[in-house]
Length: 62
Length: 391
Image (tube, rainbow over all chains, first blue to last red; front, side):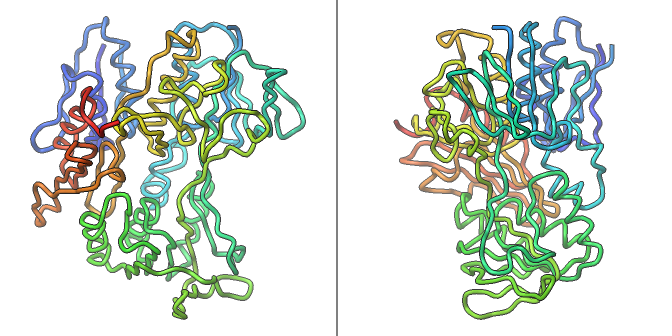
């Protein structure tokens, strides 16, 4: 699946990093970076990241 | 268990319903909410929505294919545990097998002279935010009573709209739980943006004939105002539980698994939940933050499917943020419990600050301004078993 983050919405709360630190990361400049292509067996984690984001910035594509 | 009823259709209630479904629950899920709206997220209500940069539709919390029986626009009025029924304001009732209480808080009211005058606002729900946004258009002078997070965020939003703002608080500095060092910096932030910050001040009356004209302070000062926001904090919506026999404090008292202390079939989640927290040395806490409501809703939805002895505790350190002008204030843990707040790093030019709070030498909190990565590291540290206040 593909993980999208709307960087106009992202405010670097880091909720997604706490859920899946291997997919999401905050740089030293506090800007989020992430892996776009994530294996299907991580869907539950990615859905948890979607729900954990206070800015509703994360979406998933099949 | 075939029927899960969730009272409260905001963030915690929604996450509870989603978690129950994600956990494979195929029975009835009933969501009861007093507002007519589907669940929405509240942080923009004092910022983006209030400032006009976001619409009400953009505040909706997505819930896609969630299968639930939505009963919106009707408040719960009572709980009959013997009959296992939630009583509703329209005179009807709905049975439950397990129940999650997530009725949250409302804005704390003030009953002094003039409280009912047109032009006096509180801010809690979507409709409150839209009403205040409309009021900003024809207003020049806003007096905010209460310099907590809502008061401070609204002050920042109103300044961006060109409204003159006076920010009052009875406390010696804004953001009381964060202590005087950080609260003092917050006061300067507002002063630098043209807010008249008056701490150690309390309101005597709101004056006006037919609409707000001024706010009178206890010392006799009159502050001209065409809008007043009462931002005096929040109080839990527990009145409907008064005859339930559940253990009530300010909120609903639970164990670490968010199970109410007197009824294993009833759990609570969100702003009204009181539960013992490891990081606070096992003391009972109540937390009104977005992330806690989301986490607790999810946990309560999962735990409600399990027998009491199989349920998991809620242990994550509380986290909150507040955006004021170009400053993102973030906090993890329990700053109000800290007896010593130490500023570790400060770069005033960048508006950056890192501080930690300790109690008896133990880390209990961290607060940052514009330092998200640092704050996240403290969140991880505070989540580590063994870190926190002594019991």
